[in-house]
Length: 66
Image (tube, rainbow, N blue to C red; front, side):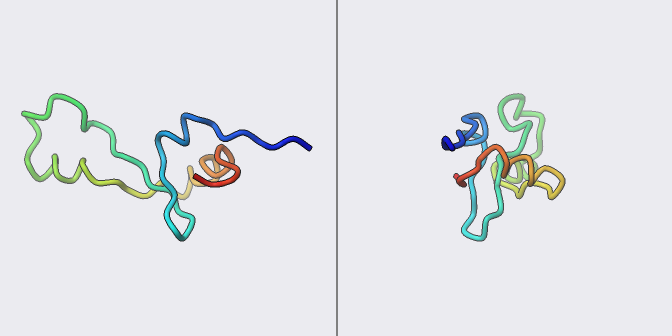
């Protein structure tokens, strides 16, 4: 049976932690930053964990991990 391919959009957008969880960048951090508070800008710069509801879809798109 041939190997499965990793979806490249998933490989570029997500990182996998050592425990197998997935991390992602937050939305709304690209432009129009002047009107956002400094606290919000700092928070948007951090990565967050993928929700449990989406975890299986990300794992299926990256069959061998990232």
